[in-house]
Length: 268
Image (tube, rainbow, N blue to C red; front, side, top):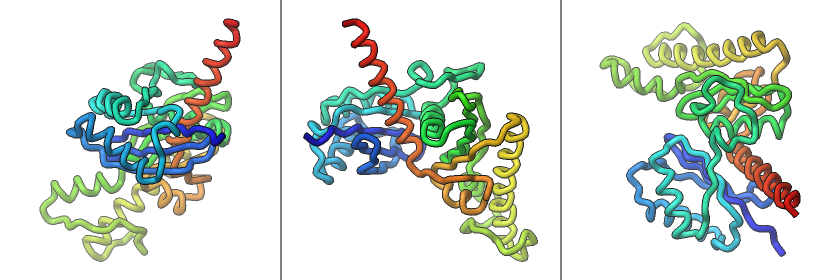
């Protein structure tokens, strides 16, 4: 009998990423825009429609694991998945984290950061620094024994550039790619030099500071939208893993499932 699938859902501020796992293998991946005005039925039907388009029926899915940084969508997602896929989703957050959140405010740690940290530690070992290039850039430090130690949050390059252009009448919108020189000869070249080269140095500088303060060599893993671009430019980044958050949800579900099975056996 073919093993059932796990549906993983990462609800971000810009995009909802969905992944279907057959054991450890990611077999399908989908993306939706994060629209807060969607009704529960719209959300459930869109997800069901995407799955149906790949020939995946609800009975083939064993469970759904979710991390969300958009709380207003959570009850809609629960209702939509129950009604249209007969799934009761489980949520990853500070209270259900399988790794210790060794910070002063564990309640404030984003579920996506927890998922990234779980995946990075279990896939690559620790100590490890995860950089997620999402709507904001997050830097997450995980110790050699798997504890989330905290990190840093920085603005995302393209959103920052868009905001500057909106608030400055004489600056044009430009494509952000590596300039040939830091000495820009046009306004567009000036913007590329300031933003692209500036953000490269921001990331490189933060990696160096994490290394120095922790006092041990760190593996550095990138994920998220612009992660591949920065990984190609910065030798300090060891690897780009586009589906790190989804893998973190899979691993969290597996750990929770294993714990539940162990508790059940202990009661026998």
